[in-house]
Structure formats: C-alpha cells, structure tokens
Length: 483
Image (cartoon, rainbow, N blue to C red; front, side, top):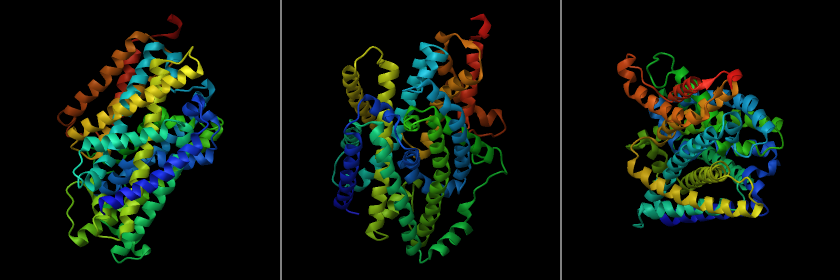
C-alpha cells in the first residue's frame, strides 16, 4: 500500500470514530467520564469488552506467534475465562457494594492511605508501560508504511498518534469509550473474518479447505502437557491466564471502569461472562489467520525476520488485493487507538482520584483538574513510547505480559490479602513490601534454570509475585484483635 492510501484509510476511520465519540460524550460530566453514570446496557458493554480486551498487540502479535507456540496461547485464554468468573462473582459485587469510582479506594478502607497510594502508583506504572508498548506497535507499523517512506521521524509519529488519542477521549471518558469500543469490536471481527477469506483465496482454498489446512498443520497444536520446564506447559499457561486476567482486568482501573458502568452488579456479571466466552472464539480466529499467513509466506517464499512483521508485511506488501491492506489498517487502527484511549482515560481517573484526590473539590474544580491530568498523561505516554521503542528487542505481546508479571503482582497480592485474610497490616510498611516482591521475582527468574533443574518461568511469575506480596503483608501484620 502507498502512504497516501494508508492515510486515506486512517482518515476515514477517524471521521467515524470522532463522530461516535462526540455523540456519546457530548453531555458527559465528571461522573460520565469516570463511571459512565452507571447507566450502560450490559449487552453493549459485553460487545465492547471483546474489543477492549484485544489490543493492537493481539491483532499483530497473535497471528505471528503461532510459529513458535502453535495454538498454545488458547491454554492461557482458557485461564482468562476462569479468571473472568472469579472477577464476576468475587470482585464485582464487592466494588458495587462499596460504590467505588476507583477500585483502589478499596485498599484505603481495608489497609490505609499508604496502601491506597501504593496500589494506585503500581497501576499507574503498569498501565502507562503496557499502554505505551501497545501503542508503540501501531507507531512502528505506521513508521514502516507512512512516516518512514515520507522521511518523517518516529518522534513525530508518536506525537501525532498520542494527540489523536487525546482528542477523542478528552470529553466523554468512559461514556464515549463504551461506544468507541463497540465500533472497534465490529471492525476487528469483520477485518479478521474477511482477511481469513482472502488468505484462503490466495492459497487457492475454499473456506472448508482452509479450515482443514489449519487443523492438519503442525502449527495448530493446542495443549502442551509433556514438559513442565517448557514455557508452553499447560498448567503454567492456564494458571498464568487465570491470575493475569484477575490482575489486568479485575484489578485494573482501565477494564473495571467499563464493567462498573453497568447499572448493577448482576448486569456487570452477565457482561463479564458473555465477553469472556466470545473472546475465546475471536482469539481462535486470529490463530487460524496466523497459520494461513505462514502457509502463504511459505508458498510465496516470503521471509519474515520478526513474527510481529508477518501480518503487516503480507497484508500491505501487494501480495493480495488492496482491500486486504485496507482491512489490516482498519483493524490495527481500531484495536490500537481504542486500547490507548481507554488506558489514557483510566490513567486520568486513577491519577486524579487516587493520587491527587478530589474530596472537597467542586464539580468545576474537578473538571479543570481532570483536563490538566488528561493532557499530562498524553504527553507522558508519548515520551514513554519513544523510550520503549529505543529499547525494545522482543515480541511485543511477550513484553506486555512480562511487564504485567512484575507490575501487577503487588496489586494482586494486596487485594488477595485484603479480601481473604482478616489480619490488620501496618500500613506504613506496605510500600516496602510492594517493592521487595518484584525484586525477589527478578532474582528468581534470573536463576530459575540453575536452581530448579532447567525450569523456565513464564507468565506464571505473576503468581509468585503476588505470593511474595502476601507473605510480606503477613510478616508486617497483626491479628485483628490486637489492633
């Protein structure tokens, strides 16, 4: 595709996106920005959550990862479904009962101010890094397709990309995101289904023939039970999926802002369970597309150095009709910008409510503060994208989950200890515990092969991080009767 055709595709999508965002958020107040006024319809939220859980990372990295791990990612997705059940029946009723704007307000009521700030700062670090990594992927693609051929620097690319995200989220917040995420979901599903059809046609296969080719390929293996030391071992992936989704969905202000926008906890539970099951089938479509992409690359003698470059290279390289390239750009743009927009909204909410505080402020004062924070978060996200791009040397999806293993572990540990243990914790020591746990995990990961007979930690490191946090909290706690 030429840079002009890419820009025209982006322009058409953003006209629709800004229209939807404006119509949904034109009357939003602070409550609309933070919680959507708790009036969202659960079927709409469930449909939107499919797109919300699928970022540009999924769109590009999941098809490429089948070469190294087959369909093994579905083991983790099964864990996602189990984790969603825990979120639905443990966390959601608790958060609705407490009528929280930010989920980290729970930590203040359970432990104290230091715990509250610790959870908020770890979320800030987690979400900022994760969102920057995800948005960096679309910036890299745009650099290859538009900015690079035009001789424009990556810094300008990142600045314009973040500016667009800021523009369509500055007014409506969550109230807009529900509808823009619904648009994203529609674009993603249509894009991947049509791309599968065009890939099958490019290989000279019918849809039935394409399905048979996928199932007979050695890349379609799902379950790995044979070697516990393998990063793809089933129980590693499944348990990592369970705890990752609890941490990155249930204890993440970004994702829970949407869930808490439903009218009540029962409707939020319906949303969570429906979106979890539908997400499985959408991920399956991406993996099937990945197999077809590799079969196509092999048949045409196309060499791909990085797995993340597979889909962009074939879709936009002139190997297939131009409509495939257009579908790719629409799908990538929908997934990446929507994910970044929701992250920017959540970062603004958490920083405004949890770190700066809004108690005692008027509606007008909160609105002014929120807008300043929103702009500041956008600038910081742009800076982080440029910095990570200079340092990144791994698969983007691997980078996202590796970061999550370190940064979400203390949050998961704090909530788990608070909900399931009645002991009172010396609040002033909690920041030290939260910092020590990731440090111990780093030491454990670096030495695991030498200490445990070749065992390699995968994303299950998140579980150990949370356990270290719980152990540390126990060590600085007192029985309830002694406080």
